[in-house]
Length: 313
Image 1: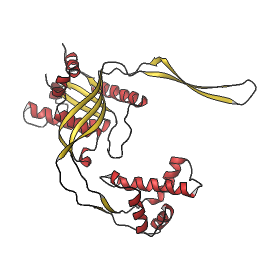
Image 2: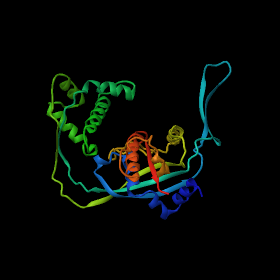
Image 3: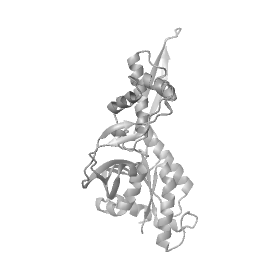
Image 4: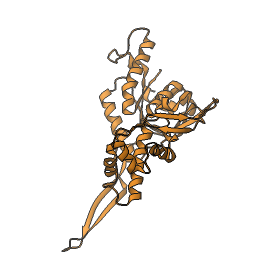
């Protein structure tokens, strides 16, 4: 067998997968998909393979948009149809993995006891509401709810544990400047009121690390020595776009800060990294240079949702 076939067989075998995607490779997968540091995740890491589809094309059914109208009238009926028996060919991938990476995380039972935060950019809250809804709601209650949602989202964006802050803490923030609702809070802030940033947590007992499952959806592309880097980048981006169009991306979870909902895994021979054109090699043994180059490549590939997995012979 050549490298691609041999690697595909290993991926198909449940026992071989653990050797192919070990703890260090799965950590790279996890850090590409999630903000692992803010989640306090650590190893060892284990892969869960709920579904592994080998081979195939990411085809999509054909969708048609159109309308019809009675002759001589201006009335039109819009229509959208999906032709399930007729598919548009998509990129070919070697495998599609749906499952998870299991990491270790501390069971933090601390709760937020007080929240005070400075929000200097409140002038754009109404603009954000208009961008989301098309206009400011006429109903006062609906307007207040829309403003509260924007302010709460901005408040959570400043925190490492966004899910720990809710409406009760927002009400406390409003009261700190003498406001009863979102409108009066915005008025107070735009007229010079300031609130220092202070987040207080209750004491939390230190407990043992517990397993945490983090969902992963990734397409797998296997390439032997001599592949085109630019070509593989193009194939990966095209395949990821097809997956997004099919709705394969997992739904957002406020408690899991994601970097990428969908990933592309490149399984390539580790000898590919012997090429001096890969940056980050430095000095040292051949193995050390491969490791350094893999880490340097991971730094920029992860920005694209791509994970480089060098495979030993």
